[in-house]
Structures are given as C-alpha cells and as structure tokens.
Length: 207
View 1 (cartoon, one colour):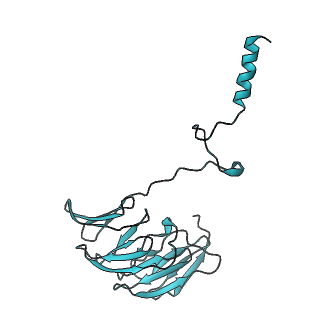
View 2: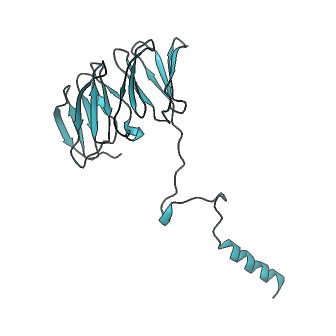
View 3: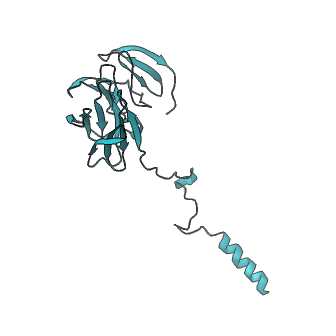
C-alpha cells in the first residue's frame, strides 16, 4: 500500500474516536441532552433605603454593607452563607437579610435587632428574597409552596401554604397598601394583611 493512502486511513480512524475527557470538547449530559451550562457565580446587588442610603450585598463573600454619602457606615459578614444571601429594606429602614438558615433584621445603624432561625432546607435561590410589607413586616418563601410573615420583633405573624400541585415561581412581592402578591405556575394570588386570600386569578406563569 502506498504511504499517502496509509496515512489517509490512519487520519480517518483517529477522527472517528471521541475526544478524551478534558480535551476542550463540549461536554453534554447523559443521553445526548443539551449541553450543561456553566455554574454562575452569585451576583452582588444594591438596595436603596427610603433616606437615600444604599446597602450592598455580596453573596460570594457573605458580606453586607451600608453606604451613606459615599462612606461605608457599617459592614457585616454572615458566616457560612455559601453564596445564598438576599435582602430587602422596609419603609422603617429595617434591613432584612436572609442566609440559608437565618432571617436577620438590622436597624439603620447596623445594630442587629433580631435573628430568627429558619426551619428546613432553604428554597431555590430565585425564591429567597424577603418581601417587605407596607407596615414594615417581612415575608419569606420558606419553601416552594409556603410563605411566612414575620412581625417587626421577629415573631411569626402567620403562614400560608399553596394548594397541592402549585409552586412559587418568584418570591413574594409586598403591596404598597396592604398584603402581598404570590405567583405560581398556575395562578396569581393576592393575600391580605392577615393571610386571607383576597383573590386568585388563574393563568400559568413561566418560571
């Protein structure tokens, strides 16, 4: 056999072999499904206070800071957040900060007002942000089907569970007047200040 023909056969055989792991080829999930997306780093965020102060949240470092007039007024580190950190600020300037196992409330000077241990595993990160109600209470999605409202002193005011087969697709949203909105993949709910369902509108919401 001529040498050029032999070389062509060798190249053809090598081209049919799958590349070794870690060779830079596109990795796919088993059974030929879509490629796995890369893991995204937790994103930093900023929250504005009614008085113009700004709180910055860095889940990668588990840190919270308050900035006023271009100056860092206080900073806190919540150990062991593992990138799971979210916050919201109420009209009375209470900052509610959630990590995997605790809801903490800080006043405008950075003093810890209270910390409440949360039972069970945390929900998905996209459901974790605390809602603030018009009366400065906090509401949390404690699971994908449950919401709990906390009084301003940290005690539990009430809890609400969705019907079987419905799951939240976004965190609770506080109303400017009273109560909050919940959105599931099947409907939108408006809950009053004491947890009663004021109305429910059918309609699928995409996660």
